[in-house]
Amino acid sequence: MSIDDITTNGHRTAQLSALEQRNYVDWIKDAVDRARADLADRVADAARLRGEPFTKPDLLEEQFEAGDAAVTALRNIAQSRLRDGQPLLSVELEEELKAAAVNASIGLGPLQAWFDHPDVEEVCVNAEGHSFVWWGAGPAAGHKTYAGRLFSSDDDTIALGQRVVRTFGIGGQRLDPKTPFVRVDLPGGHRFVAVLGGDGKGGVSSGPLISLRRKRIERPTLDELVARHMLPHRLALQAAIATQAGLGQLDAGPMGSGKTTFMSAKLHARNPDERTGTFERDVMELTLADPDNVRDVVAFYTRSANTEGEGEIELGELIARNRQLRLDRVNVGELVHGPDAWEMLIASSGATYRSLTTLHADDPTIVLDRLALYCAAHHDRPEEWRINRMISQTIDLIFFVDLVTIDGRRERRITSVREVGGMVDDGAIASSEIWAYNDDTDTLEQISAYSPNLLNRIRRHGHPIDAFTMPGHTP
Image (tube, rainbow, N blue to C red; front, side, top):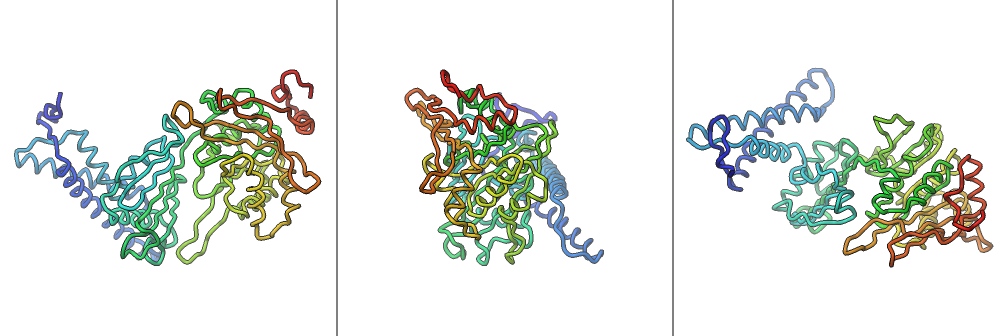
């Protein structure tokens, strides 16, 4: 059956060309824009009467106004088509036009459909509207795909960026030649970054740029990651016991490899009575709070400065506050700045359980050096021996998570596990590889035994060590 054969209230429904659909979307959007402007005026007038400062309309109010205006516009379109003897639009087509118009006015425009997709992690828009999508879950997890030209012109890209800043920005944030780079925290913990660019725009790039990072609500378990072949079952059991026993763990790997996913899964295996804190930059991805499973979780994230450069809260400052919150464990989403790394080590050394954190690296052999480099950038300028001693005292295990190519596809795998030891005579940090990846068989194999010191610590916390011992090896 074709769309021309469908009827609505006894009338044959219409099939529209792309141009007709665009015209109708513009018509509905104009009505929505007028309704939003009227609402803003009413809110401003009411604030003036009360002697209060200007305030923006509540987002929920705007959504209601936008929906009502769109329905009225669609009713007018239907009446116009009936007068002209034209077939009505189908209910499905009306919903599509309404969604497109409302998103163009109050949502994220061409980005909205990608933003609504549960598997999408990030969408980036380059000059001339060329756009790319990074997938965090589903069949394309860990991959980047080309989404086409989501914006027909740079002016459209800039217009969306400015509208999002006006709608969701705080403290007078704006996108213009005076402030050509802006980050906006969207409701729900998502992040929107816009960069002004293009000839004659007074920006800092050859064309306007947008990065939309979604907070994906994913609560994977270690068993689920085993089912995805990310790690073997015995290592998953080791990771769970290591977390419950309070061992310090660093999950390293390249971008998109699944570091945060693995860290989140381990923290879901933590002791039920643990009071744990998560500290993240920009976007909250460690979704430990679960409404169906009440656990003691406090979550923090950084805050951007306003246009006057005031109000910024950095991750290092948040971590340093943990001691006032009676946290059993301090977990840091990703270490990307010196103050974050050093504050995390200090917090970890004084907590009931040592910290879990992630760090970007493309090779397991450079992880400790990179962590030390970050610590050296702290404003206290700690000496090298202090940094190495603190790392050796607070990091017990390093899990390296990578993207490997299997049958032409990029798959997430843990490819190395290292145990961190003490300091050697020259002041360097000792470490040994416990698990290694076999590329030929796509398997992770335990090649060395854990140290007696680590096994004894696990015992003292009341956990068995059977899963940690190698076959035929006596601990």
